[in-house]
Each structure stands twice: as C-alpha cells, then as structure tokens.
Length: 294
Image 1 (cartoon, helix red, strand yellow):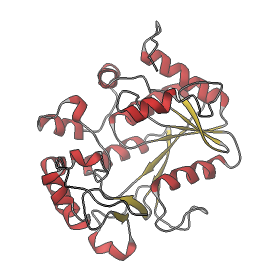
Image 2 (image 1 turned 45 degrees about the vertical axis):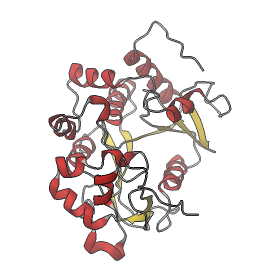
Image 3 (image 1 turned 60 degrees about the horizontal axis):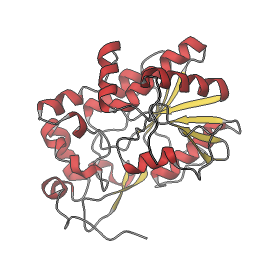
Image 4 (image 1 turned 120 degrees about the horizontal axis):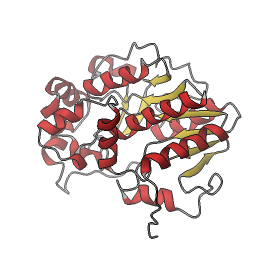
C-alpha cells in the first residue's frame, strides 16, 4: 500500500491525534519503555493533557528485569513527574530467549531464582511487585497476554485507549499494523486498532522518523534516556540505537551493547540469562537459534 503525504508536519499531526484520544476515551494510558519513542510520546501526552485538563497521564512500564541502569534512571525521572501516574510492574513474566539453544524461555523476577536476579525489584512508589495486586495475574504469564489483560483491568468496562509509541518506518510489521484494512479501527483512523472488548491501541507518532524524534528532544529540551549518549560514544548510528529487552529474535542484534555500555550490568546478565554471552559473540550467526517451544 503506497504512502500518502499531506501538508502537515508530524508534530502537529501527533498533537491532533492525542486530542482526539483524550476527547473520545474516558480512560487513557501510555505504554512506556524508556526508549526515545515512548519518551517523546510521554512528553507530547503531558503537554496535551495539561492543556485539556486531563492530567495525570497514566503510564505502564513492564520491568522485565534485564534493563540498563541508565534506562531505570529515566523511568524514575518520568514517573517522578507530578503530571504522571505510573504503573511500574515487576512481576514474574514468561519471556522468549533467542540466545540459547537449550533454554528458549525464562521467567523474569522468578522468586525461585532470586539469588540470580540482575537487580533488586524496584522500590519506587509506583512499583507493583505483589503478585496478588492484579486479579487477572497468573505466575509466569506471557508478556503479550499480560499487556492485554492489563488494558481490560485498567478499563473497568469503559472505553479505553492504550497508547503505544510504534513508528511505521521501524519495520514492515509495524507498517502493516497501520495500513491493515481488516482490523477494527476507531472512526476508521488507520493509527488505531481494537485489541479487546474495551481497549483500542493508538499509535499517535506512527509517521515520525528517527530524525523527528531527536529534533523534538533538542528543540523542546525534553528529557531522554542518557543511554543513547553512551551508544553514541560506542559508535552506534541513530538508526542502530535500540533500547529493549535484548534476548528476542530481532533484539539480540544489540546484545553486545550491554558489556560496552554497562559492564557491571552485563556481568549479572550473563549469570542470569542462559546463552547471553554466546548471543553477544554470535548474534549475527544463523546457527544461533532454537526450536520453537510449543
């Protein structure tokens, strides 16, 4: 499907989309990872919510244990803002591990492996570490399952917007998410997708490019994850700087950044995640794979 350009900059368009979201949805929350895209989205959301009297901005961060310390510093920075109501979830979640041929899955925050945890569970006021906090939670549930269930829990039967900072130029799958004609949309907006009975995913910055993200950070003086500065010093280009759980099929390409940017964190990662060191050494080798668990 071809792209159609209009006479409007992406900043203006994203502000308009956020206004549509706050005007039409009684409940709104924003997924936050600490990366550049979700950080920019949070700053945009705070601006619009303040102007529309919709504060605080509710935000979900699922802490999967294996984060950079620098990323956690930025999470605290955003969640400490009075305009933000954070949900810092650090519960045992079942995760994919693409860097081991022998153990293709692992459980973050598994209490049986507490002595191997990469770092202690968060103590921030927004932290949720009690396994009984959510009525829907089950030990070791899949990350994707948790996110959907959280949305319905947050909705409490009301129409809800789950706002996600994906950009269509990052991957073909994300582009397809936007242009998909078969999905259920909100008012036929391509940047919306119905994901459960009460929840729509919203993608207000889907048309931003990497250059747009950093231009906004510089122009408006917004806070950002200082890990990007370390990545720059390691010679990474703007398009190769990714902050995410680094053990997935695509994400493992950036696994080597751990020992380059935060060697102390890396030593704990190697002890915690099977195959992490091998994944760092052979991340580009097709031999590094495993049989999909059924």
